[in-house]
Amino acid sequence: MSTDHFPLAIIGAGLGGLTAARVLHVHGIESAIFDLEASAAARTQGGMLDIHEENGQKSLHAAGLHDDFLKLVHEGGQAMRLLSPDGTVHVSEEDDGTGGRPEVDRGDLRDLLLNSLPAGTIHWGRKVIGARPLADGRHEVTFTDGSVITTDLLIGADGAWSRVRPLVSDAKPVYTGISLVETDLFEAATRHPHSAALVGGGFFIALGHERGFLAHRETDSSLHVYTALKADEDWLDTIDFTHHAAAKAAVLAHFEGWDEGLRDLVADAETISPRRIHALPVGHRWDRVPGVTLLGDAAHVMSPFAGEGANLAMFDGAELALAIAAHPGDTEAALSAYEAVLFPRSEASAAESAASLDTMFGKRGLEQMVEFFSTGPAAQ
Ligand SMILES: Cc1cc2nc3c(=O)[nH]c(=O)nc-3n(C[C@H](O)[C@H](O)[C@H](O)COP(=O)(O)OP(=O)(O)OC[C@H]3O[C@@H](n4cnc5c(N)ncnc54)[C@H](O)[C@@H]3O)c2cc1C
Image 1 (spheres, helix red, strand yellow):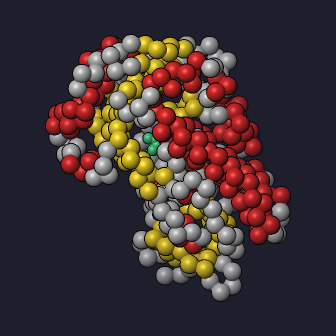
Image 2 (cartoon, protein in one colour):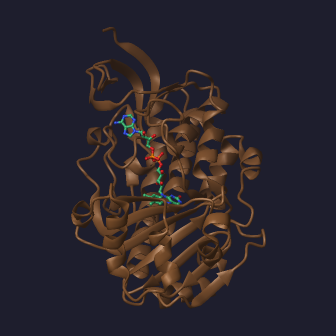
Image 3 (spheres, protein in one colour):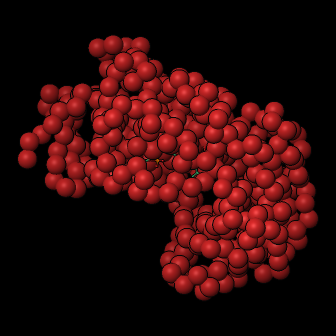
């Protein structure tokens, strides 16, 4: 099999890799993206993301896509409700359109980026198994189908379990102690009106006893719910998620005595699936390695409880692309400039995410979150 050469190869077509490719394209620099998914439509990308002014939205400005992004915003999606286990509402805020963190559907945002790239940029169905440096400063990347490419600049945007990361670091994500069970309630307005009213138009949290329910109202009127609790790393393996009734019962056994409306977010769900939360060490960094770098979760996967990961992935992608554009012909200067600000930025967000996990699932989680939201949006 012949070896194709790509001057700039990005592994991973997540929000981070796509933003990097788009901002490079805006600056007249073409790249190739390789992703393990079979096609753009291979997997639904559900889930709402709030896109922050200071990073996610800045990236969309750099990508020349901010106006199109605004057309995707879920009106009313910045509403927020916080409840205790007995169903008492402690915080209820409507979306008055003035918040700085508009909500969008992750799939819509991804489509916006995908459609902004020249045809052929993304090579689908290419799962990387490893990469190695070559004597001439380039890198060789190997795929599961046996094919191999070489590249002058290798960008690992391949998420938490990055196959590019070992080129720069031995660090691996560690289980945070929090396990999630994800459920969906489809067509909530008509099929689950009580749950729809409970969750409201945007983001919803019910917390207590070091566990809780986190939910979003999606643009298609479904409810996406994360049931979160502290559990041993193998707890989810003890549940058979192919048997929905048994899986729901196993999860709800940890929510005995909670308000029935809250329990219905699991009991009435049409889907149920497990997810463990892993994080790289706070302050993860590496020494400069010629011709390769990381962005997004590959560089700094963190728990999702500060809502920063996707925003940071996009910001990293934009910042890396801008650094490359600002240092034509000097990749090492570009990577050094990018990493010099990447490391402190990621460390601050990772520390914030870890602290947020401790707060939410600590003994005074509810009280502290009520205080947090009472001090106003500036605290978010
Ligand atoms: C439950 C949950 C809720 C979250 N909520 C939020 C939120 O509200 N706000 C927020 O900002 N962030 C949130 N996050 C974090 C956010 O999802 C991630 O930080 C973000 O998706 C990282 O983007 P990325 O582009 O770095 O990586 P990813 O989105 O993981 O994309 C990586 C890409 O690489 C591809 N890939 C992986 N391995 C290979 C391989 N070996 N070969 C080729 N391709 C490969 C994958 O197919 C994928 O397309 C949440 C995360 C979780 C788990």
